[in-house]
Length: 183
Image 1: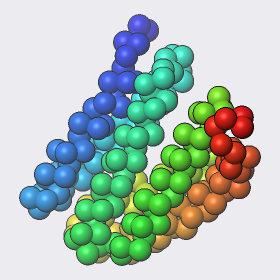
Image 2: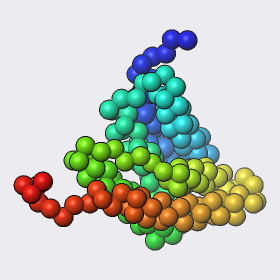
Image 3: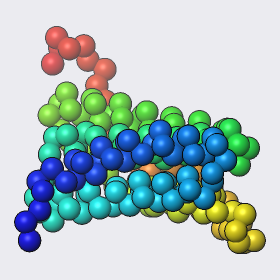
Image 4: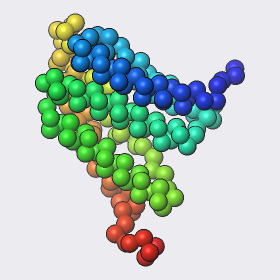
């Protein structure tokens, strides 16, 4: 099977393009349609990574843009749900802080010619976030969805803290207090 070698990158770009569409739909109150856009965007995350690995189409653009697109999508949804009063602000602060810390660590690692891989806790965090956020769009449809989405959401907050702490501890050697000319 012949595959477009740019397909994973195009899917990542599509995910970023879908974020403003998602925001507009969410803010206009079209929660179910916004939820469908969120599901499609989330699926592109799964799809682009699998295609890139399966067909050896990993690129520098994909390594950079894929995690950025993921963070933009998830954090946008979390912020919108916070604004709507569905999730507490403190949880948003935890999620945003974790992503900034991890991004900073990854940037420090690049300066040392290292790549920091995601770990299982980060993957669990992302899966829980996406499942919780999908269900939140459809809370009004099924009476137990709000309870399930709350459990998943708070579990994702727990894994946000756990994965962030684990990431920092595991990669603490990347942090350097030396000035550039001491290296």
